[in-house]
Length: 106
Image 1: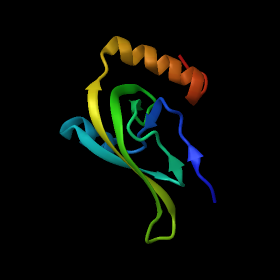
Image 2: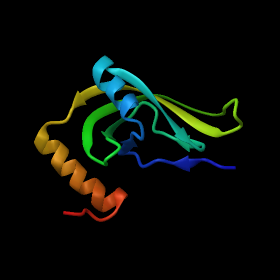
Image 3: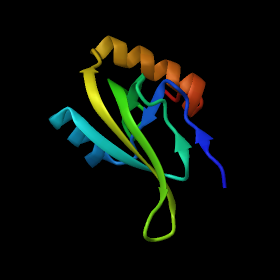
């Protein structure tokens, strides 16, 4: 058992619904498997499930726990700072593919 540290600039959504809630209401949360440490209080780039940069968010809380099913999970609460422009999203997505997600295809 241990904590996995997330990159300070990456907050990737696995659920489209969680991302849509954040963009619509300006606040949201996501649940990640395993114990993870997110940079509470910092601004990070949010990515879609397809690895596309979409917004800048501020991490409000990061709570690691064992849920009722006995699984290690981390809940991350965040607020939307702003959506990225098309140009910003393209640049951030390209950099993230090289640095975090693997080689870019196409």
